[in-house]
Length: 519
Ligand code: NOJ
View 1 (spheres, rainbow, N blue to C red):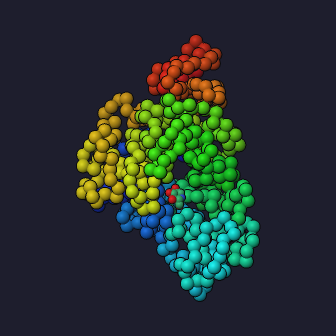
View 2: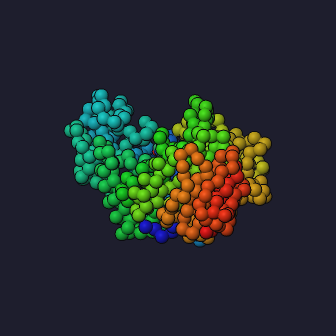
View 3: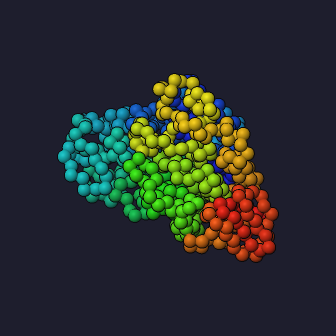
């Protein structure tokens, strides 16, 4: 286990929209370098950067054309190495985004693979043996696009042909078993990409659709797990301090596959969703109807809907790695779409004090809004969560010196749009409450990643929610009414939001409050 994960707090950067250092309207690596002091100042000591590799950008870079080349719009490979170097000097680790399941249709492997005459890359992707195929599998196929007499499987959009790691159960003559040399070659090609960046200073990877590698896999994704265990063995031997976090949202499977961390995502029925995004969405991706999120003040929150999913996974995985809670990401609606800054502050307080390794999506630290925008680069309804970072009230909110019509996406021009500069000056801002919380987390070992959680009070439909980590007791009451519970404990407050105390054996919490006490 990389030792630095114990105190790691991650900041996710969508590079298009973070900071444009050269004034061409789109964010770049130099822009990230220039903002590292800001990031460190808030309390983050690790980054996850969305794909910054050469790409036709039909899916914002998740359609990689060349894994070993930085997309010119962000800079050069040298700039990326400089980012590693400067970040390390400031005590910040950098994870890149690894897309192992598919490439762009413009990747040279795919161009070779689709030729009529077989090449060395013929089996690098999943092809049937005839141009006409009804599709009996769960894979989606694209027909009529290649000279080759076959149709090819895709992982996401049409532009993202699925790489071939084999089939756990072979049902058709064109399906290769996972131990076929050509499938092993795909895995080895992935390792080669990882080595390429790790040996230049990268600290690991966020892994896209990590569960998607082997097809006709079993219920546990056993075939896919096997591949990751093989890759983890390589890391342990060659890059023991490199970290892997998976987009899987099933910690028992992901951590037994060898990932150090796994994200809890807003998938249907997930406990994570019940905390923050328990609403239906209309066509514009806006929350509509009732919102039952736990952190919604007037919601009908129920912490058990989270705990009933989280605790069994936590118990099952606590000796193997970490669960990663996220404030959001480039695929989810911004939290500010349904939560007020005060509700967000309470949510962050819990997210950054539960065990595991938490992630914050850029802009969530100031409560950036979700904007209704036309789709950009395959973003569709996700586009509204990908707008430029709001640094100050200057031109383009300080994101870029380009003319507004040249920006990658429009900035939030509403007069009350939150900015870093305004919130830095306001002692009670979301940004400053987060800063103080992260400072506490870095200082108190009991609040870091190691699983040491005990639930003191977490009852169905009731408030507050109180938990213990080592010598610290933490409580939250997001509801609009005061709530208290007898614990037989007394404590000294280390951090509070709103009004609350742990005195005379009781944890007393006014509406919308959070506290950390040493007992
Ligand atoms: C998950 C990524 O987070 C998302 O943005 C992307 O579109 C798909 N995977 C496909 O790579």
